[in-house]
Image (cartoon, helix red, strand yellow):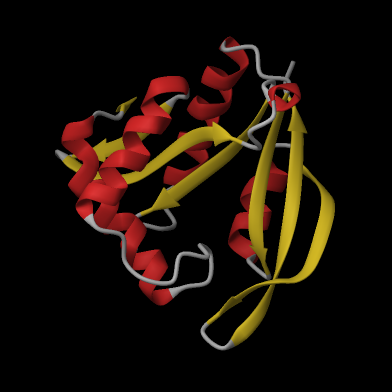
Length: 161
């Protein structure tokens, strides 16, 4: 089941997110977020953007949301998309189901462009974005540094309205 995220979901979402912080380079956060910091982040997202969860047997297995791309008003019709699937729950099309719903909600809110900002290499995320029609429009070389490694970022764009 996919439903709107609420602040009551914060702990479950934080657990999913912090796994990626601690163990991967898909996020450039370097240390686990606190519950208060993640709650503040979630409150800001829920205020202006869709945030949804995938739930199975009362367990949240993934979440997706839109967020502000850049702070200047000319960017108001562009949104950055994010999706995370709980470690161990991959291969069940959860990311695809979340993205299908998120993109529909973003269309309904009249956004024009959706941007996926991905650490490269990341074959699974690239495949997910390409499946939905995103095209890579930029490749930024060595713009992040995590786990003693310089990391590239790819920007993928989908025009929706």
